[in-house]
Amino acid sequence: MSDSARQPLDGLLLYRLSRLLSVAGSMVIRLCEGRFGITRREWRLIATLASRGALSSSQLAEHAQLDRARTSKGVGSLVQKQLLSRTHSAGDRRQVLLQLTERGQAVYDELHPLVTRINADLLAVLDADHAASLDEALHQLQRRAEQLAARTVLPKADRRRRGTG
Image 1 (cartoon, rainbow, N blue to C red):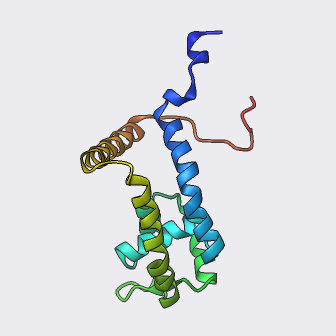
Image 2: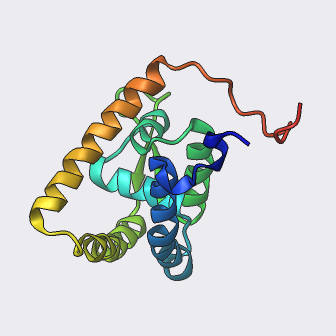
Image 3: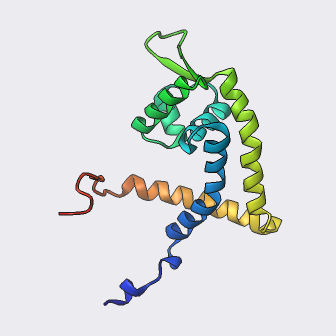
């Protein structure tokens, strides 16, 4: 067995971030699903619309960093739950804008402070200097990831194959 095969996953940034998200994110998921009856993806769409205002479906997908199919599914579910509405643009009847309903805004207004509190509780372990350094490091890592993704060509996932072949 090669040395690289024996390396623990704990040394990999993406693995560590995934573990952190799994533990801390589960609290947000329980709030979303258990108390508000929405998925974490629907929460992301609600939060994006709350912060950006009315958007087209493609703009929403871009800002929420979701693919169009998942965005469309989430939008359909949120419309059915009466948390989001579709309206035609005044200038172009072909363009549909998505926006929160009063009920959707109320969910955001109630859930956002709870999610903010979870984040604050998590960051409370860091002093102000470490928190600022973490924030800057995350910005740098995000920019780098976007640069790498833009220039790296990898095969698309084929889940039907399930890793065989």
